[in-house]
Length: 261
Image 1: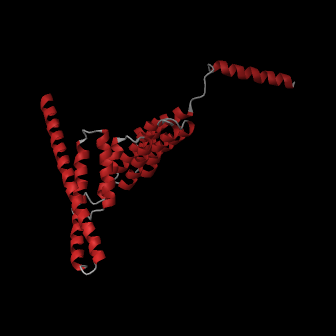
Image 2 (image 1 turned 30 degrees about the vertical axis):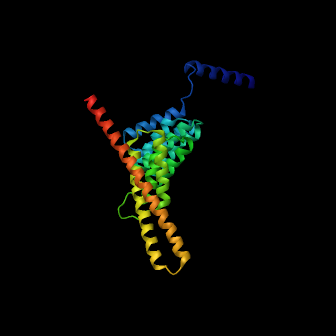
Image 3 (image 1 turned 90 degrees about the horizontal axis):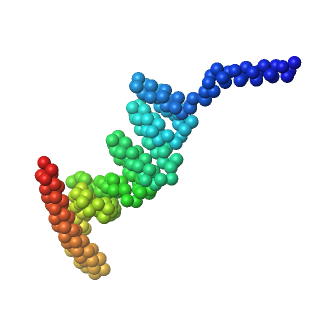
């Protein structure tokens, strides 16, 4: 009797396979992605993000779905979750260029959201995977320049950050000698650094007068005065070279524009 029941079950199972055409079960990643797209079309971003998340549970290697999920979070104003989604693909690839690109996307998103400290972190991560990343170097130069006071007439100059900014711009120029903005921004950083050295020179001159009875203090102040004066002269010469290069690049751009118009 038991053997008969098993035979009947097997027959029914076989019949079911025949009737369904031996169809395979649907891919859950594709199903949830489609549902996510449907919710996105209806602007139901919370539901879309949820469906994309389920799709990624089935297939976490689909970069496009991570980007769709990030977009849904952005629509909801969830910047952190969007950033997390954009950086996830970097975990599933060994390609350093792809990893760098993922972090650049995150950095660009943070810049758009005016969260510059987070953007700086993302660009720094991108640079770890692609040291020749011109865009990341340029932005890191900008962040350092701003912290050094170069983007404000009233901010005090910070030589540490200005030195870092100049170094970033130099790296950009070495990668792309035709990058006009790198020369312009480097000149701005150097100009702010000159302000610092002028302040140092003025302070040294005052100390020489105030401490004229203390030979050691006068000597130290004189040394700083000499150093500041030399640095100012060097920076001024560097700025002259930068200005000349900027003029050349602008002229080249104008000539190219005229030739194509």
